[in-house]
Length: 404
View (tube, rainbow, N blue to C red):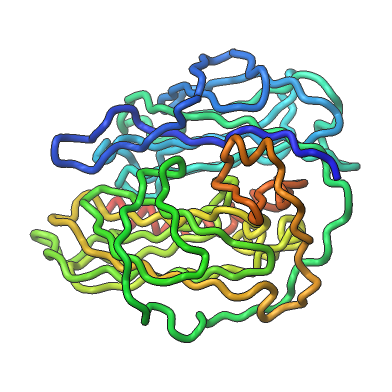
């Protein structure tokens, strides 16, 4: 078995301890991130910080070999309460020095006017018939996007550079069937207290056995929770928002409640949104079984994103216009491996890599190995599926946000 060479993925955040004396805390950035500027060489795997404004393009040079898969990430997280526009965000791409794209661009947008962490990546996959296979220098491009009349403030962005060898062996086929309803008893156990983190770096670790946790969201706040998912397991997530104060002067806040799920590479798996009215509300997500082959055969972005065994991240967000904090109960359940599918459909779990455990990448522990799931990421298929899903909803989301 080949040893995976990797380094910490990306996280970004607004600097500062708090968004205000009584506001929610700002996103906690990676402590070892190195500052860089546009045009800089990223000398190797690691984490780097920079800033970008709307309409600005930042470029970073990376030298790639001809045998390794490379993943370049960006996470954008303005301070809670900072002004953002519905179409603000980032556009990411990897190109040759002459400007030829190595794949489709990846767009990352807020799709709302509440600042919250958003993240994604581009990749170079070593595989016959794909672009950018030769060793040499390439350019990672990060562009700030948004409407010109919006805020021109610079926003901190943290960049991640991860390298791994191409996989040694072909992956088993992905599962083709799985359960759509959560296991019986979801949310019926005794609730435990939890305090979600500001992002991926300090996400609160929750038991892989499932259960119910109690927390509270302040207006404009996002909280993150880390859940281990093994090969073949499905994750069921339900957020139950309790009674709170109704919005002043209006009956509801469109998309005022958000539940999102990210995979160990900080890639979006799925998202659920709901109205905030001050009345109790419930949002739910259910995943496909985690399988190595989902990266190339997943029929939707949500299925394709379930390509790793490792730490998955649940994100809860409350609209900045909510008048008071909201109590929330978070119910989690994981099925046994391969429930509802072929028991042989998941890739085998490989032994933990000591280098990765030392780095602490994505919450990897003994028996839950992120790198076993890291392999050839299908950039073109992944981005196309994500774009189709987002574009189908984009007009409605933008119009909803404008009416606010």
